[in-house]
Amino acid sequence: MILSRFLRKKKKKVAQILLTFSDTEDRRRSLNSRETIKSLILSDVIPIINENDTVATDELKFGDNDRLAARVAQIVEADLLLLLTDVKGLYNQNPKHYDNAKLLETVKKIDSQIYKMASSQTNSYGSGGMFTKIQAAEIAGSYGCNTLIFQGNIDNPFKNLKKNDVGSLFISSEKKKKGVKNWLAGSINISGTLEIDNGAINALNKGASLLPIGIQRVLGKFSKGDIIEIIDYNGKKLGKGISYYDANEVEMIKGKKSTLIKKILGYEGREEIIHRDYLYLSKR
Image (tube, rainbow, N blue to C red; front, side, top):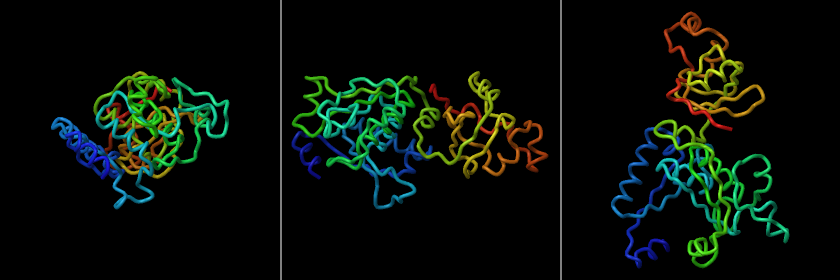
């Protein structure tokens, strides 16, 4: 490995870590990954992290290093994610095709317009293009981590960044979270979706758990313990959480009072679909 040889010349110790999709999306395994990474850092070893392509499948893989980096940043509770690319940052249009393209130095909100500005073409230096970097910035921002995208295909990119302060900084509006809510915020393995009514939205915003009576529609197939997304009537994403019931059971008890769960399902279950301790709500 070229980087390893370079760092050895600098008398720096390195270790390679190969992560799979499940190593970040499974709560227990993500905690193990975090402890491994932190132990290496405390031992003055620089971890070099890549996706384990030999065991990854198309259905269960990151597919690009940008989203992998965002999830690793979440695991170690980083304050800033740095993503290098072959241009100075995010432009309002592709700078390789338009001479009048303008660099966006600060981005406070990622929306459809920001994604339209991003080129979907991959570059020569990694597995993702600007589009996946925006996705990574959105993942990182969901749990309170800022992202800086800047040029890396030049000599001494970090010295250049420090000297010229050129790049695109994505500022998160979210507060840093701890524990399971931090992990939930950055999770990208969503198994299903629940559409809820205004009463449920108000209750969640006041700190309540999600009860079956507030559920309007059940979308997708998910199992007990899966992460599911919560949306409103217009499809706006409100948050996500860990479901206590599977999709078929939620379909049976949606819109019903919790006192009827035993009668409908035939067993004494929990009164909530998602407990507030396992629920993440987005500001957006």
